[in-house]
Length: 218
Image (tube, rainbow, N blue to C red; front, side, top):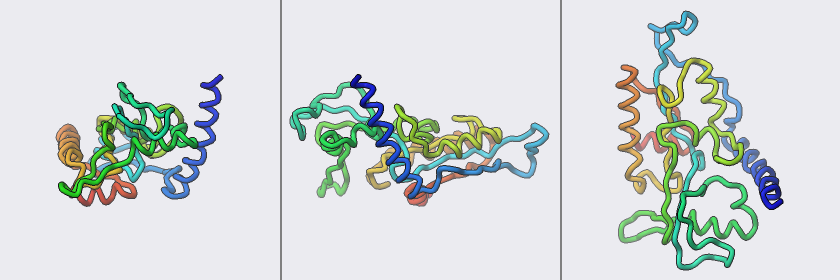
């Protein structure tokens, strides 16, 4: 019974998130054309795609967390979460009361001494799915929350293969490019690998804040 209620909440809250996302990003329907070079022929079966790396926008990829905290906002907030769990996005976290638990876990703390942003005390986070597209096709692992799914599926229809010539470089969108010290070397390594495997240059497809991250990368 409780699972059914939670799923209903997830659906209704997710509709709000999707509508807001669609209104802001305008990326719910993308008519993608094959990216190719002059020596390939898509129609004759010799299509060799130029590799694509997608760099999503603010809030455009999933986040996971685990924590061990001494204090929480409410008695019903978990102090200990040993296994990795979804931090962004589970619509249930946005329910009244629960949103206080969630906001305390997802918030960043500024360090004036180091001029960097760090996780809330006791919280460890990670960005799942680097090099894949799954975690940017949908913003949630549990419910349908489409983001880059139409784009990726259209490119698959054009001959691309997930993880081979179309990949993603998700990042912790809470942080600045300066604070996220791991993202640039990982993204450079991903681009170089795809380029080496295909013996071609790589196209970077970015959206929203992903364009600023791309500019910082370049």
